[in-house]
Length: 120
Image 1 (tube, rainbow, N blue to C red):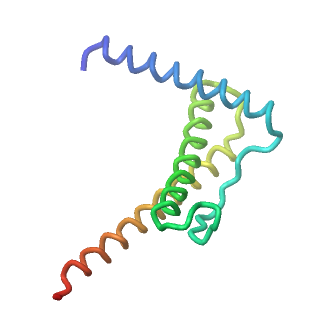
Image 2: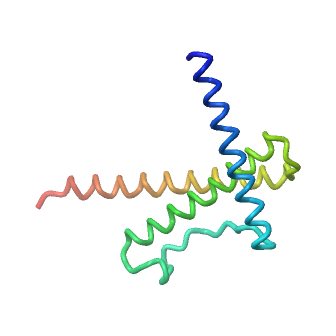
């Protein structure tokens, strides 16, 4: 890896941190309370009627939780005054959400493989 490549990656990280900080400031102005983590609700009627819509909604929730954790870590790394306790909680939420998603994928794949092995 060349020195120029490292420098450009560092610049990209700083740009992303600035964007996330700006978005967080706008979010703080718009809402007094940040987004809360909610368990995946595959029975949610507003997400759509198909399983694909429900899974898409669940994946969007996972993405939101991970993006929130990423922004808090970037704020912490950039020296912004953040609560370390809340940052660690958000990281754990993101970790649990990712593990849950991987388990769902593994079970769906296992069910698919079992269906493919059935003889018609």
